[in-house]
Image (tube, rainbow, N blue to C red):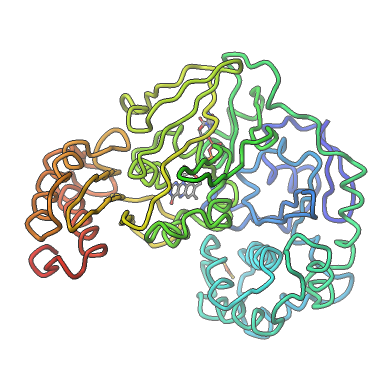
Length: 476
Ligand SMILES: Cc1cc2nc3c(=O)[nH]c(=O)nc-3n(C[C@H](O)[C@H](O)[C@H](O)COP(=O)(O)OP(=O)(O)OC[C@H]3O[C@@H](n4cnc5c(N)ncnc54)[C@H](O)[C@@H]3O)c2cc1C
Ligand code: FES
Ligand code: FES
């Protein structure tokens, strides 16, 4: 049995761990405020808050309930729109939406209110830009985003900053209750969660059969296979100790395969790595980033996975375990063909590691997608150049969307080492990269277009990283 707190009450369900939370809410619990839209993580109508008990309080995050398996709820706090309603009237956030005329048919409104509440729960210093960005995963068909964004900005201006140091602290919750964003029952949840225990059911360590499906964030699995996973045997990596750890050693960085995109952003580990930290905000939406893991991004082997493309350019090495032993493999050798990996059934990707970039290493990521947010790339690429005395000592360049696998551009990377940084070198890199790829025509563009685009993005690496040595007019 899976037991958790649903809004202000304990709840036990007999649904299988692979059922999705949206179905539990609407069909079993009768909470229809959480809407069903796309059921693929795309529209945000089903957004809920998931609170996890940590040693220093509860961490709440907005997630898409349509791709959240029920097994993830055990020992946690699940909050729906009904759970943020005050006993009487409207919360201050809901009132701002009314005042700004930011709701028309109202279908998207519960998801938007929850996303913004999740943003305020996750920040002690909310700001206008962050509030608006937190809604990139919520689609509205009728109101128009001007009044919605205005509401997001108004509320962050109205409430100011929290007196708390950490957003997981009780003081932060007290502040949100005082500002009438949350109802007072939130203050008693930590104690109740402590009495419930979070250990069971821990499916991460039990013996794994060939049929066991490993669930990390589930954002890929449940977006495409929710029906057949409902009654499958699952193991949830979020329960496995150590899988989320991000460690900075003297000259190496270790990232647990269970670390989410949000964990990487919050850790600051990319802060000295060119535009990588900023680029992570373009991966999917806040809700998906809160769940999507590094391991899932690599093992799903999508040729356009953003994290995979980034870690290829960082020349990362993977640590793979079979339960009793482990082995290491370079990420660039991990992909053997379309969705064919150097990973046996039962093996687990535990972590990855790469050399920490120093001040002589220049890193850049470029992504072109049909829309800025909530879209996978048509073509993406990352580059890391270690430079000494105006020459490239080592180059690592990757490219997505141009081959059946996320591609390490081996020939282009090798060719560049020892070359001076110049427009000629950049032009050579563009030509070599184009000759190294074999894209296909698909909905994201023709093969010819993708080759052309890759060339432009390779050129963009040089222009972004070495603006004084490169003549952009000759390249772009
Ligand atoms: C709306 C939406 C937008 C998206 N936008 C983007 C985007 O902009 N950029 C992008 O790159 N991706 C995007 N994705 C794709 C997806 O979210 C990511 O690839 C994500 O990182 C997958 O991670 P996960 O933890 O959710 O994987 P899961 O769905 O849990 O797992 C994916 C696969 O990997 C296996 N697996 C997971 N972890 C391990 C492990 N440690 N060891 C062995 N096997 C493992 C699982 O068994 C499964 O086969 C998007 C998805 C959605 C739904
Ligand atoms: S129903 Fe669209 S994101 Fe869940
Ligand atoms: S108000 Fe109608 S979909 Fe947003």
